[in-house]
Image 1 (cartoon, rainbow over the protein chains, first blue to last red):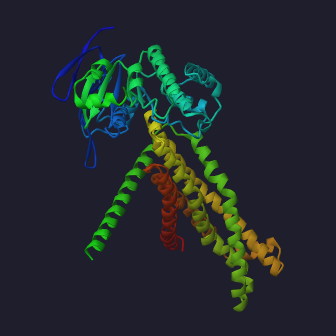
Image 2 (cartoon, each protein chain N blue to C red):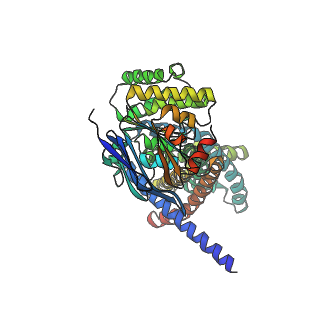
Image 3 (cartoon, rainbow over the protein chains, first blue to last red):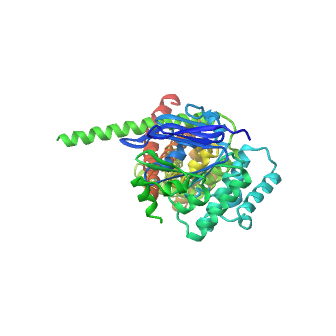
Amino acid sequence: MKQFTAEANLENNQTVNIPGEPALVLRDVHKSFGTQHVLDGINLTVVRGETLAVLGRSGTGKSVLLKLIIGLQNPDGGSICIQGQESSGLGLNEMNRLRIKMGVLFQHAALYDSLTVEENVAFPLARHTKMSQSERSERVKELLRSVGMEQDLNKMPSDISGGMQKRVGLARALALQPEILLLDEPTAGLDPITSSEIDNLVLKLQKEHDLTSVVVTHDLQSARIIADRLALLDKGKVAMEGSFEELAESKDDFVREFFKRDS
Amino acid sequence: MESTSTETGTMIYRSLEWFGDLGSFSWKVIRAALTRPFELREIIRQFDEIGSKSLPLVALAGAAVGTVLALETRSSLVRFGAKSMLPSAILFSIVHEMGPVITGLVVSGRVGAGIGAELGSMKVTEQIDAIEASAVNPYKLLAVTRVLACIVVLPLLTLVADACGIFSGWVAETLADPISLLRFLDKGLTGVHFSDFLAPTLRTSFFGLIIGLVSCFQGMRTRGGTEGVGRSATSSVVLSSLFVILADVILVKLIIIFFP
């Protein structure tokens, strides 16, 4: 693959060179809700095939960041570039064409509770592909097999556990073979063993599908396992960006405090 | 005194903001309704949810109104020596006013609460976000289908309410003073024209539009977890019932003007 160099401009104007072709670039992104400035000039670059974990305290705008990327909310300022295409100002049809390139796993999986597991995974396929019923059914089974849920096709979301819902959510997120995977707290509310299973599953799927991923998480262990690079948010800005080891060895008070809690 | 005027000002501001948001929501729904693909399977599912499942309640309400109307009207007409007018009075009252209004209110209670709670729950559990993230227009999938089903189903349910009301009115009347159903209908339909039946029945489509739009709007703007879902369900019922009653007053006047 042709190698490019992406530049991530941090808060204090330092520039980090990240080898690779940029899949996702956020430049000076701002977002406020009323008087509360949630994101105050976020700069982030994710290169193709890379996994970036976004960490930070509750209420620092991590989930808002994902919603801005997927176009569920609009930034107040700055720009978001997805696969080389500027997303702000796009019409609904153009935005939907971009959304098809992205798969999203929501914090509580957000499975449609009136549909079965099978119908949930088939939902994007039925709307965006010309697959026949049998082809779609085969693809759904294949996706559910890859997340270990092939036995639960006909169950309703309310009949399966939180961990199983996350697995089905992952299968649904991968249904249209996206290039970018956005994960919002994939291990939140799960026990340590299930969290570890989800981490390993995400890692396996990232490799199998050659995905670029952005993972929002509180879970440092999870971030260490699944992410190539971490970005720590504080007060609406990227406080520090780098590998897990670089952040763990940081002398910055906030970063040390954040890592101390989990050590 | 100053705080009262501030509160009034805030209330007026919020009301205007609500109407503005409802207008913006309605525009999105209209735009979504006019673009492909049309969610036919979901529309049919909503016909069943809103129509078939409201049928027993609407039929029961219509029957109850017919019975009460027959019992109440009978004593009044007997007092004024106009007992023979009873079938006409029952038929005219049910077809013109009671059937459409009772159907509108019953459906706004059952369906308004259902839509408000269902969409509210989908909103707070991020299911609506997930639909949008799947590059599917949630206004088309969730709102257009429900609004359209309400518009089509309301007049059909009104026919059922009318039929049940007239039948139960006949039953109540025949228990007091035996009369055959055919004779009852024949006497009742004397002087009743097709326009007497058409305009009041079709005005329930407008009630359907109100119920569908207000309930979907309240559901899709839900905030604040399960408490918010409860608030959305309640406000859907209260607001759609209120607007059905207001619309009824305006539409009755318009019908009198255009179908004298």
